[in-house]
Image 1: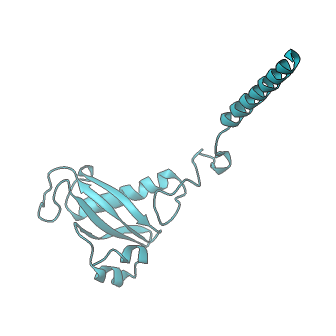
Image 2: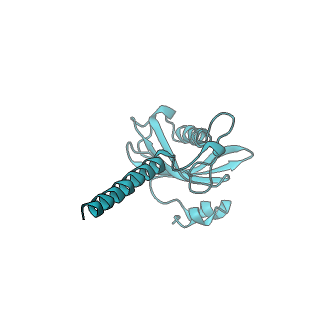
Image 3: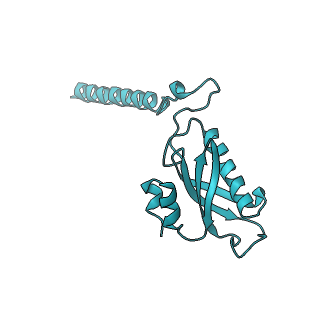
Length: 158
């Protein structure tokens, strides 16, 4: 009888050790191997999209585009770019929409109130972005129709 208890205890002990080894080795491996998704500059080339319309080549790609559009918004509303924060919500390579906030005293507070969320529409033409519209409320459908914007943008017009 004692011999059976020792055998059962030994089997349980071996099972626990094997389970622990399996658990440790499984959790020590990375969940996703990104090594094949890196270019020569060690940047991820296939990141999770930050912009709904497409996956950028690198994270820097989206930052450059956002900065360019932010500067155009600031120019359009007569603000310093350091007072404007912009985020792209959708971008497909030709059209973009998103939101921006003016974070300091605005030169023209009647068109762009401070610390409110504003909307922008932009279009890329001949390799350069152009801000077509800025405002607080939904943009007019006339702009969407004029430039034949995609459904993802046109569904938000009024």
